Amino acid sequence: MQEFKECTFENTNLDSLKKWDIQELNLTLFNREQVSSDLVDVIKATCLIESRADLYSSYLLSVFSSKNEWHKLIHIWNLEERQHGQALQKWSQLVDPDFNFEELYKKYIETVQYHSETGVSVRGSIANELIARCVIEALASAYYAAIRDRTSEPLLRDICDRLSKDEARHYGMFYKFLKEVQKTEKINIFNKLLILAKRVFELEDDQIIYASFCISTHLKQQNYNKSREGNTYISKMYPLYERKHIYYILNLLLPILELPKHGRSHHLLSFLFYYLIKIRIFLSRLSLMNITGNKIAHTESNN
Ligand SMILES: [Fe+2]
Ligand SMILES: [Fe+2]
Image 1 (cartoon, rainbow, N blue to C red):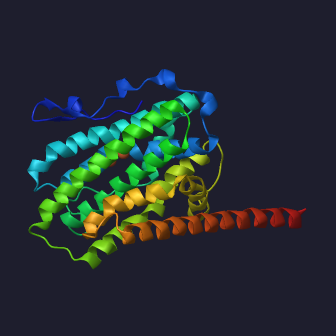
Image 2: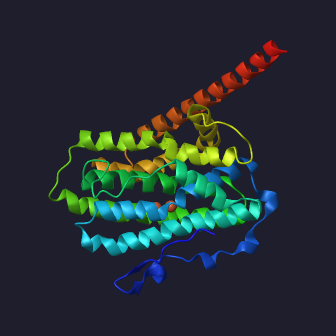
Image 3: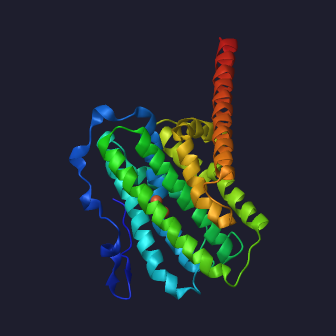
């Protein structure tokens, strides 16, 4: 079992300050017949990513070392993120009792390093770090909402509903911090757009794709091919999104850019991004078909 460090702050046990507790999950809701096989690997990979909560927290506490007044909330956030990994692990082990979390998690964190705690943000400043955090929390909230809306398995629906709401609150916390910082540190809209876009493109980096690789190749000997694994992951994960989820992401992100919500531009952007995602899915599937086609051709030519 993975060991987590105790999370206390000024002698307060912060565990009771979480919005909900893992013991509240009603595991008897689980219905194997309603598990969609497409989702199992996606959830297991997400479990590995969420389980690095302590690393995320240590990094953020180092970046926010001058912001003592934020630390208690960051500790609570850490506990909630940690709990996300634990809840997804519980569900994954109900689906697959052989899901060897410890082994896979060890492989994952040994290979993919998280940002080191140098006290300096990899995004260049505290404000930039907060924008990147807002993006991640907004995307995570929409991601869990998309799974909740797609699955009919009752326990996963409940878990994803809780996680989506947690992530939305986390967004609210980082957005509040960002507002506070912006009183003294102005960031122009182009800079904000750049950080936002960079963070979205990072969704296809090793942090997520290698987690997917650990899960999909478990027990199989296969070399890591980032492009192939990325396309596999995208073709499973992106189709979960409906237009309302894209609208929801924009609903959270437009205020960062100080752009109006619910107007014509909001609808237009959600339409545009929704179809960009469709194109991305198409390209991923095409690339996977080419790989499979090449493999067959290669095998036939060798015979
Ligand atoms: Fe989370
Ligand atoms: Fe979160």
